[in-house]
Length: 73
Image 1: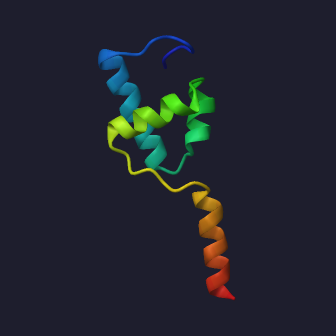
Image 2: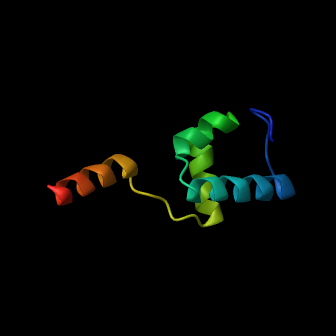
């Protein structure tokens, strides 16, 4: 994994981008990815955009849980 505060470019950036996209699509949050990689939220968000990952709306899991609860009532 890339060390904290180290510039990421070239093949290393592409590898990190693919890994972050895979983990995000598997359900991890941008905040969680940020914490686990030691990178800023903005950096992770930017790489996900570059990777073409479809970004979830803010509060996605919480909003979904509320919507499902409302439907089941």
